[in-house]
Length: 433
Image: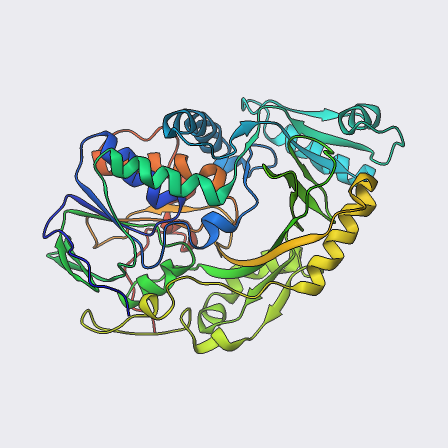
């Protein structure tokens, strides 16, 4: 039983979701002196914002979000300096290794497609890659290296940001699920939480994998689905590089504790819930591209918290039933990934798995976020669908939300993040069957 909280009767902005986007949005609003209440159904960064790899990267980004990531990287540096806490932040570089000439050609193609962006990435030769890794066996054809990319410890970073937001004046409420958004004449007027109603002018939905479920209950459609990723941390071992290394079979990041966070990019379970069938066609390109490494699963959650549900504002919601989504990691996959990491980097031979975990990633069909206001819902801003790229780009997304709330010109083009891109026309508030 969750102890009842006293929620404020009124504020200017209510932020739903205590992941990196919600927390930094609250921080930026508090910095401006704008009253804000952040409502998190469980604990701050309890889900994907503490379960990701900890990469803060420009390398390999979709060109549509690259400029936003460049801006976000600068924000990370500023925020980390303000925290007064060690979150493991550092500009250590991120390198995508190429095992084959074909891999290297893909990196070269990305560089060509992003000319004009100040990302600082460059191609390394096979010898330069060996020099970086302090080896001389020409294991790799080359690499895409971005010396200015950074990393941090996710489990430390976002809670520290929430504490900073609170010091700046934001009200940060854990174990406080928002059940509904109320409106009058198409304008947001309040949110109803499990602990009472909060009158407000603006609501920011930064609910991650829960966003689609929340919007469906309001009669709004969002083609967002969930994929489960499995990650491990290892026992301490020799340093291969201070930064992060990406490769098709195993990607890794050196941790503060001397171990490594290791996972396999794109190797995920596509969670089959009722919404998957409604939006299946939109996701076919992603599935076709990754069919060799992505699994389709119909599990117990088919009619569970992410399934098709309806509730009233005075009823218990899925967000209260599951405070923190904690999916079971794929042990067989992770054992294979660790073996691959040791094959790629022989110095890691003595590593053992210290901990494993699963996380649900909110994915859009084009793997680019939605940052928009649905028609007919003046004052409701959606910021979701970060598609596994959210830790690094989170502050940039929060800044675009701030720009919208304050009526300021956005720092980057907003067209790539429009909700309407999935319908080919201005999106309509549509009832979900």
